[in-house]
Length: 245
Image (cartoon, rainbow, N blue to C red; front, side, top):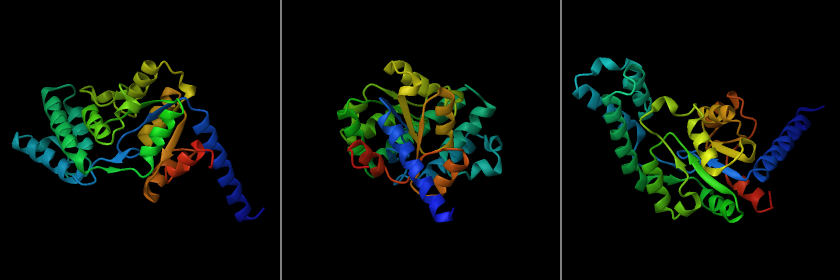
């Protein structure tokens, strides 16, 4: 069997898998930052992370983070690092609130993920029930959905970050909250996420998973994590729903 034949078979298998995932789901759980938008497209995450580090240093806590953590481009990693050393502390509460405010500031300059708005509306119109399960602030999620006139497709099912940071993905807590609220059995749902932590949470919750990757690097991370079905464009998913995939 030639390598071309093998590749064709793999593509056919993944296409079939995608159709089965999409058409078999009655409850759709979206991650937020990635599948729905790039939250920090205009309000850069690197700058937000740096400002959180500066705030900690201003509190006399410059020794709290490692050298690597002080220059990490993801503000969530700064929050996680502090929570590991001072779990459930007032310091963590203050830092989480500062991150929430930065996420809210980021909403107006967030970039919608291509094809996701019509995908959401189509799924809702076909009778699927939708929820968001995210590590971002639910306040930021609601503000973004309002700006895109998408809130009615999800309300009230938005499950995001709380002060209990140990319950963020890869813990399945927010997925389980969504499933319970929707009255959904895990096998009737589908989680769409762009990170290995999304996949781990879905696996722990018993929910089928579809990976979304906006670039080759993201796809590689998902493949390495064992994700069996990854799309580079949500237009493919929309095509399946419209019967043209």
